[in-house]
Image (cartoon, rainbow, N blue to C red; front, side, top):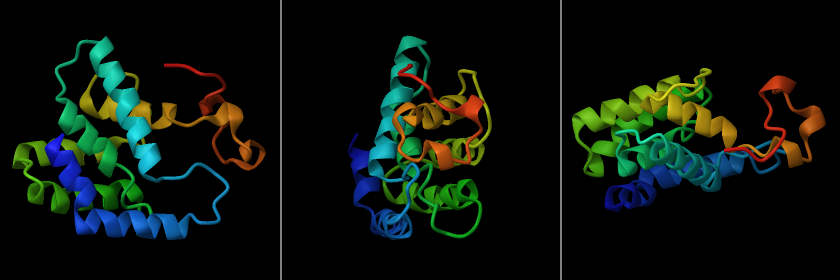
Length: 154
């Protein structure tokens, strides 16, 4: 996980986390912080192990760390997050191919997916990390009721 620690320590990553935290300081809905990124990573990696998928742990964790990092940018966050991944990952020791895999998955992480591809795992794990069943802002949430996590499930 050496390269993922480099992502976490990267100045641009740190700046993005700080800006997201500032933007979401008064947000009553789910946050897009490091805790969410790590929840997404852990849920996804459990799926990878259970399904015996050939997906590298460190590469998947990198995608989870970076998938929402563009939230503050003012443009669609999947696009901004993929752009940040393209900048940050090579500086942290990831190959061009690895970087492209992650950027492509980030671009797709907002779509509904139930499959076993890298992007599918990121997308479903992102959504499953949300604790809708205990959310204090559930009555005001824009998520459609059928999309919400109504119980503990993995």
